[in-house]
Image 1 (cartoon, rainbow, N blue to C red):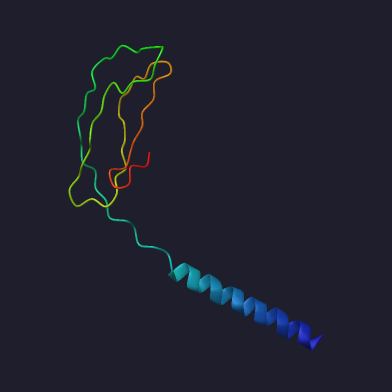
Image 2 (cartoon, rainbow, N blue to C red):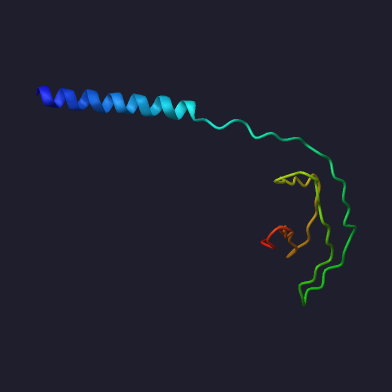
Length: 92
């Protein structure tokens, strides 16, 4: 009985310590800002028989380690798609 209580109190103690350390280890907010970037791809006629790159644009922000891109307005036709590719490693 005494051993069971000791084990339970020890486990509760470790749990409380773990929760306290976890609460202190929350990451700081990532610094960021919003930067407008206007782009217009114009209207393109799709070719049903093949896939073509109708529009290509490189977006660069000097000193940025990462980008989050937001498309405010878009109108993709049937079977149309957008591919975003990293300049660093070519991964899409």
